[in-house]
Image (cartoon, rainbow, N blue to C red; front, side):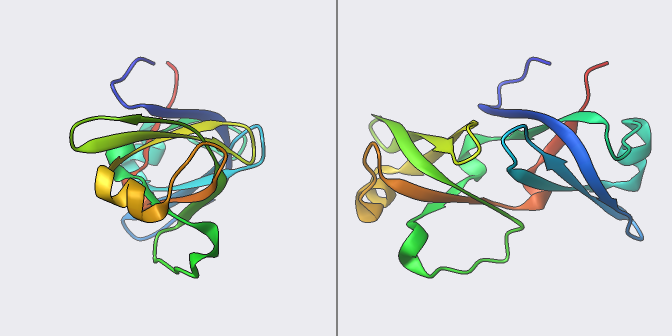
Length: 142
């Protein structure tokens, strides 16, 4: 599947928690990281998702929030993935930050230059990435 989103993760559906309108889908990546998505029940049916199904989690880079792992920050986001910075590309206003997750996958975040400086982001530095379950788009290969 080709999309403009920088973050596309292939994995297996490891849990489906049905709700009244939306379902919570857990997708386990090959390295063990888990991404949680909230999608409509109709989407679960249309995508024919079942525990064990192959699926994709798609997250746009601007939806990713970064923090230092030792900051003590607690957020209501369902997704919290740890890793280390592997590259930083600075633009006029924003920085593109590549992160190697502890499970081995690569995640990209777009943050302001002020945020990157405030966090002291640098190659090799540990970082934690947060994003909301409602910001995860689930897809399957047809």
